[in-house]
Structure formats: C-alpha cells, structure tokens
Image 1 (cartoon, rainbow, N blue to C red):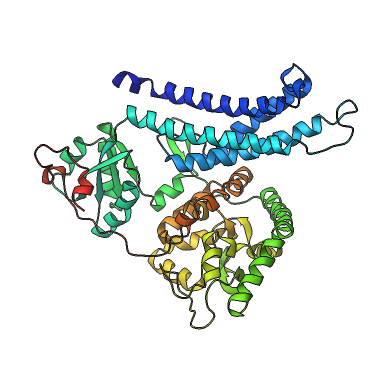
Image 2 (image 1 turned 45 degrees about the horizontal axis):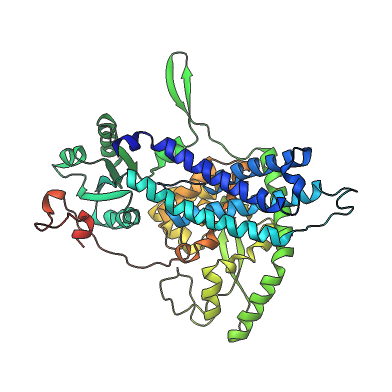
Length: 474
C-alpha cells in the first residue's frame, strides 16, 4: 500500500483517462452504427471529436469533475452526469449541422434521438461505476487521516464536527479540544490534520505556523483578513516582497456585459419557465385559494430596498417574517415541493429583468435579518457592495440553515473573485442544486451535541478494534 500511495496521483490520472475514453468511445461507437463515415478520417469526424474533447474537459472543470478522494461518490456522479449531458447535446447538435449536405441530409434534422438516449444511459452506468470504483481504490490506498478539532467553545465545536463527520473515509477525529488546552501541541504532533475553528486570530496565526513547521494539514475558517487576501497577489516593491490587494469593483465594461447577460438570460428564462410557473400558480391557487405570489422587501446594492417576488409557499394567515424551521407548520403541501426544488424562486426572474436583481450575486436578505446580522457581524453590510442575485456560491454550496457568517464569507468570495467567466460557471453550477434538493433546503434545527475529549480518554474494549473517537463519545 505504501508503494501504491506514492503513485496515487498517477493511478487517479489513469482512472480519469479511462473514464473519459469510455465516455468518448460510447458516443462515437453508438453513433457510428448509423453513420459509418464517423469512424473514417474526415473533416467532420475531426471537428466532432475535437468538440467532444474540448467541451468535455471544459464542462468537467466547471462542474467539479472526477475528484475521487475529495468528493463522495454521489456528488461525483452528479457533476460528471451534468458535464457529459451537455457535452453530448452540443456535440450531437454540431454533428447534425456538419452532416447537413446534399449527399446525406439536404435539410437540417436533429436526428438519431434514440441513439443519443442510449448513449446517455450507457454513459451514466459507466459514470456510476467509475465514481464508486474510483473512491474504493482511493480509500483502499489511503486510510482516514487522524485529525484533531481545535475550537474556542462548545458552540463552535457543534458547528464544525458534524461537517467533518460526513467524510468518515477522509477523516477520523481522535481529539476535540479547546485552543487553551495545555496538551494542545502534543495533540497536534500525533495527528495528520488539524481543524482550527473560531480560534482567536493571534492564536490561530501561531498554530498555523506551528502546523506548517510540523508538516500537518491545516483547515481553518475565514476571518475578514482572509477575505481581503482573496484578491491579493504577490508584489515585490524594489526588494521588498509584499501582498498587494486593491479595492476592486465592476468597471464600466463589466457592468455593461453583466447587465446585458441579465437581460438576455431573464428574457429567455421567462419564456422557457412560463409553463412551469403557470402550473405552480394553478397548484397554489387550488390548494387554499390564496395569493399566488409572495412579495417581500429585501435589500440590494447600496442598501436600496425593493420587493422580491416568490411563489407563496406558506399560509397567509399567521405568517410572519422569520426564518423557516424544520417541520414549520406555516408551509403548505404545495409549498414543500416548491421549496424542495427551489421552484419558489422562479418569479425572481422578473426582478432580474426589471434590473432590481442580477442572475449572479449575494442573496437578498429580509430587512429584519439584515439588521440582526449586521449587529452581530458588522461586515455583513459589505455584501451590499454589489447587486443582489438569484444564484451564487451561497445558493449553490449553502443551505437554508447555513450560518450568516458562512453565507457572508461565500458572498464576499464571489465579490472578490468577480469575473464574467465566474458568473457563467456559477450559472451552470446552479443546476446541481436540483440534484441535492433535500440537502440544500435543510431548515434551521438543533443538531447533535459534542463534548471535548482526547484520544487518551478513549480506549476500545479488549479484543475489539478501536472505534472512531468521535463515535465512541456519542
């Protein structure tokens, strides 16, 4: 296993190439059954194959790709399936266009749909196999990293530990301690990975430097100084190495392009989604006869207030402006379905078309939440530097119950890394929300409680294999 571990990057690369070769082979072998010329050297064949390769690589990069050992198998299946689906559709469309000629097809036809469906089905089976097999190989070579969790309070501990425990094949928690624990350095020395969460900045800096010196993997949460460094770059002033961080913002060209994108996407979105919105309106009206749309004042760029449009998912009587909780009795039966798949957000396309929102940007918060969050986190107002959006990092990666601070960091990550290309990537990645609907719509609720402990305090019964320390303590 030690020898295999040395070559694990090569093994992962081979698996990636094999997967891509299988997806490529399935597409062209299936379509060659009715288009024999597709396997013969020709301009059409070359362009079609090049289209598949370039699109496949680009879309896999957008959706996360084949990241075994990093993602669980299901997210890998989701990302690879979406990337392959769009690659197949566009390559097939290009193939139909190239094959329109007097000898074969005098007029354009989007043909061989049955073959396209067969291709997608076979590719999906291959993706599922490679996702599970790839992770099996990776975690056979790599055992879980022994890690310790260092926090400033039990509240912080309860926030981070459930997230780590979702990845039991990657991490095995052996210690959970306060950053003031006198045994801290000994604990770090016997671990592979250290999680620092909500540790005071000066202490965190010292611990990061210590972990770096001891070759320990480090994870720590964002603070404002980290957000500022996101836009930083190295700069050498004469002979002085410095970090350069300029206050940024959209320039005139970027603002024009972004607004043009918003207009085009919202116009197309209104046309395409109109049948779905009509069905939603009928279902909402049929359930209780109440209003179809729900309007609420929200804050956008510069603190400007506007009314956001959503499909009504809660009962009109007794509903107040407060965040949704688990099993909230205000939510209607239709509303639960709409919220699960984020369909209740569709009417916000109207806000985008009107210029009140953008397709990509921080989510517009309720005014009550803005006041509350800003009192707790004064930095929360920084997210109002750009126009509110329908999608973004917080909407794609976050959940309804993601903490205000984590939402703020994700929004600031977007603001500091703004680019048109990043907007396009986030728009495409929004589709992944529908594939993890039950996770992304998780409501506010009380989670498990965890206690501080060290591996010295946990021992397995004689004759039994040692358990994960965090599980033994449950």
